[in-house]
Length: 534
Image (cartoon, rainbow, N blue to C red; front, side):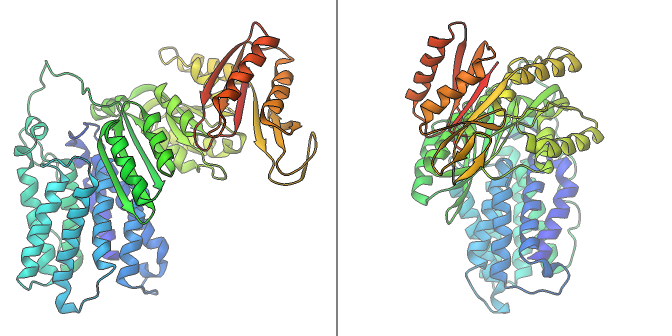
């Protein structure tokens, strides 16, 4: 298992650019090879971290433990449509190899059963399976492996049969899917799967595949561009998140997401799932996850940027925003920003911020960290991105409402320096407040609070201690508006009713006739109330 994992990762690393180059379905965003590689990398890391001694021969573990750690690593790190399907294929393998015991003479049949289960679970995970994709390749490999296993073949025989079956199925994909036929390429996800089956055969036999399964365009029949072709009119966003939920809740989630968009893939089990869907309303897709359970590691990608990348183009400028709520993430994504969601008690590392900068795929990036505690990570991510040739500016936003103010004046058509100055000025001119509930008795800058008290913070310091949310919010607004203001922004937490916003809007209008008020839903993981005064 350890050898298969490392060989698959290395082979996908060699082939990732070639696979990216032939990625035309379901979205021509040139990232299938990268997504498969990153998923395999997460799977390999899961295996290595679970059993570090395996890498140097000093440790030992059972096949069951190893394969389950590998599949779990793929599940939590799955990227894109192809990576999500790969994660489910590995889970299918784990379901068999992690449960059954067999003598060496029976290993061929065991492996064949594992490949069959993998294909079955992958098909079941996709809402609307399409032939001519990596599902077709997986199914063909499983059938070939089953035939070899039925003939009393060894594990090596089964692996070779599966590899050959996958390669043959891959060659047929342009005739099965019109998008591939028009482009003159085979399926990119299927290419990656052939790489993985080649690594399996190599791990068991010790022989390298005769040639790289993927090298350039696997079916060299390039078609001239169609001058009448229109830009892809599919959904505008890709939404991916991990979800802790029951199987029954996930069944309802599938139905809800299926009505929102396409390319729906939900993989996993035992309470943990990886959800992937293409939609026009990313907030609704995330909200569906909130209804089903607890979503986290939410990634929202705008396909406009991905399609530019597929054409070898970079956007001139992009914004990356760190936000503490799913509703805010959807709001910023709709405004064109690449988002990183912060959960309570967890802060994104510099690597996660750097990944978001790379996903933005722009020559210039404005990074809004959204909190003083993230400045160091944002600075480290910006430094690495600059080393990769991206011009990055970090605007020292200390709250999500400052990020919203900066995003509101963002001008992608103006010069980079002028845009950064304007966004910095807008953020700096926005005072920020927050309401939180005290968890225990403690000393604050406003006195001693008791557990359950409502704390009103202004610019990061406790300014008001109150008994109720509305009364405390009104006291905070009075203090914040005491020095003037033109616009109040209210961001409601997930459990705060709309009536609170209506009460506060009326309160502001009554005492400050010239001040406008705008209200947003922060969504899950948002504070009970965020307040911005510009």
